[in-house]
Length: 464
Image 1 (cartoon, rainbow, N blue to C red):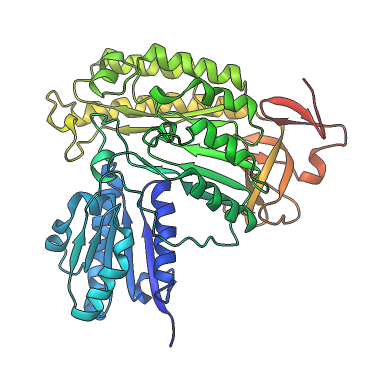
Image 2 (cartoon, rainbow, N blue to C red; image 1 turned 120 degrees about the vertical axis):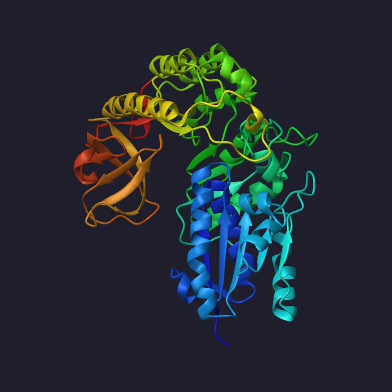
């Protein structure tokens, strides 16, 4: 009997990428194999995001296109999972008659049951119970791909912060940390399969272990991953500033495998707006944590998120955000116009900011950050950096592509390097979104220095 064909489309965040991998393992046990063309599929599964409006609209657009596939093939199964599925539930079945099942963020373990019902009786269903503080991965199979260089590992899901604009607690539920031994064993398996870099995932990784007495805290988790043989690099996302502890900050100076990059969403430079957002910190407190991070790891690369046009944001609030960007000099910044998310407190806030005002502010903020990002990237020109090769460059097929420890994309010429190779590359030219390196065989003489852990390091010897 031949394999059945699965088209799996992931929208949104890295957590969804990890969830999709887990889903594909469940479906592989049902004889499904991934295909790249949805028109060939026996099962189309969309793993969705509703944190922002744009990915939500992309899901609706895709479902509209897939209606034609269902008309041509009545046996085609279409399912929707993830945050938008959790948000809409049975509403998806009413709005899209060609959708066969909807499955929420903590119900992936029920995919077998749902598909059995569909195959036996044609029963359409929606499973969206959040199940309190229950680990959604506890009963899902795990079988990592042996071809990966870098992998995501979820260590927790959900959030207890209830920022006034954020839908995550309503679609991912309350915080639940996975058992540390289960996480560490998953990383050991990945390392045995050849993975060199792991990114620990959670809606707020800094809160890891807080709801489980006796469990490791997040700094302890990083230290435990540091001890796993074969893992060369450790990353994590996302951090909430109010939970960025001193031990975690100090880990950037103590753990050699912890990469010199942190994504620390600030969202606004205005204390008034931060309070309305229910962020739990002031601008001054955020600045102090940035200062401590740079003391712990002088060349740490810091990126952030910023929302413009939050309800009642005045021009002076927006100017405070620009001033914070100027003062901190973020290496990069992801910026968004505020949009109402169903069920959140901010949806009911009056004094909505006009669209044209939000767009003007977004454009001004992005223009400022582009200049800073380019300047920060140019500081890496003529530096020698460690690059983890991921494969051939998308920009030029004759080039290699990889990432620095600070999470820059680097394209460089020369012989093809195997994915997973760690090579030293001298940066020749910096651009807004990537760095251009020289051929590795020309980039580092025997007595040359490379940038590692924020200091100048020669081969086999650190210059303190």
